[in-house]
Length: 346
Image 1: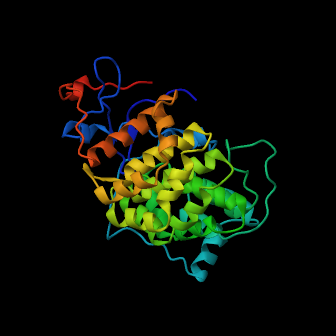
Image 2: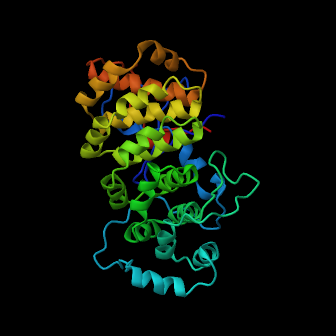
């Protein structure tokens, strides 16, 4: 698995760094000013893993996470009426599978969003094209895979997918019976939940929390980690979203992940718990109390001494939040680190 570097991406596209003590250990002092800025330091492994090229989705485009484009009152909202969809389809030849290939080449996001509804069977490739997801078996799942690629390119394409009704369909996939559609929807939502606040809000408004929490019980570790990644993006730094996640059983789900054998799943769950008990630079005492009361002390103590650095670091910083809640000052006396003194590790 290897150690990850210490900067950690945020759904708004920013990153933050972790300061280290002179002996190389993470600085976990009291959460005064600098530590409040520094605690979000774990680079999200799934953010790297789910870049299109590394997720088995071929693309030559640069990933454009972090533009954080907000609503544009003049942006085009496509006409998705049946009559206009028929006009779109008339531009392409052949059956839906052939039309999908042509629409992909034309970067016709509205028509690809329309094809999400297709259940036409396609011949699945024999070789596995994604590390954990099943190969797409329908035109709808293939359309979701292509939209995932576009969503990973820039925020304008995310908004185009939203404006064409794609988010609603992808969220609907989560609660469906088609395995390939569920999995491609999760992959697409990993990209879509990064960067644009309006897109995240639209995903939440379409009721994504409950089906995602259900999918966190998947037998595939990669699926679990991806689901948690999406959920974290959706509730990050948002009071209403955090409350909705908690009401949907989110705390219990994340704590259950801490006993999983996958390092990736455990690390994501720990970061998810930390994201749930902070807003901006401030500890949310009510949320922190709920997490602290629900967590299994024996399991958590093991994570604090985990031989895997990303797990140990995430557990250490969650413990520091609990110490802050209890009013403890665990400042080892290390002076506040300047930006130039902060260090990242590979």
